[in-house]
Amino acid sequence: MKIIRAKDYYDMSRKAANIISAQVIMKPNCVLGLATGGTPVGTYKQLIDWYNKGDVDFSEVTTVNLDEYRGLPRENEQSYWSFMHENFFNHVNIDPARINLPDGTNMDAEAECKRYDEVIHNVGGIDLQLLGIGHDGHIGFNEPGSAFELGTHCVDLTDETIEANKRFFDKKEDVPRQAYTMGIKTIMQARKVLMVANGVGKAEIIKKAFFGPVTPEVPASILQMHPDFILVGDAEALSLI
Ligand code: F6R
Image 1 (cartoon, helix red, strand yellow):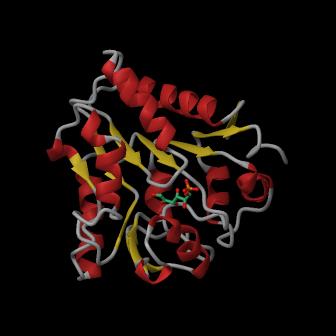
Image 2 (cartoon, rainbow, N blue to C red):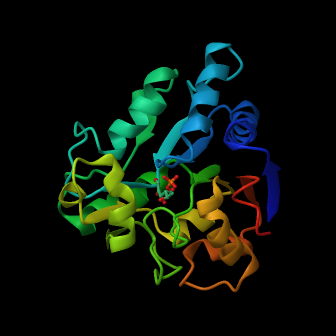
């Protein structure tokens, strides 16, 4: 585990974007595992900026996103498909055919999870997986208590996650109750894992996840066992370690 201390959100975003660009420069046809949420938005902004300056080229990159709400069509502005297009894909030269997310409209959970695992397998696995962390230690939608050995699966969102995500919806009732998520097994199989964390609100969970016991009660804690795990945090998120 490598911990990189950044000054603030902007510095965290630049450092994370540097690691991702290095990956793309070293292996132009790499597979990037991507995340939604507030934390990586600055990282995407920085990558877009470097793309516009001609410093990084995404034309051969394949992406696989961590998760998608079950039941939301792509076109819904709260879908993760929309989020990723708005915050990243629409602004770089990524080939739309190489963009992959779970299909929230496939209500056959078993079939959709199987399909998504095959997609990840068929692209050769993930070279670099970008992650945020939930206040309860979730990664993707793997909530506390999730088995470490799962591939893509359908989850019921916890109240805490519904509460945290309602800021993106008109009202709490509109937040979907289920999601498809890459499992921890898949995340752990990524060749490199890069987590971004910022703000004092994440300080407690960062300490628990990376300086406490490895336990399914804190899903991110398994990353202590990953051979190439990098945490880039700002001063506030890393203030308790
Ligand atoms: C996003 C995801 C989630 C978020 C986590 C942190 O695809 O799977 O695990 O990374 O909820 O979210 P933010 O960054 O909004 O604090």
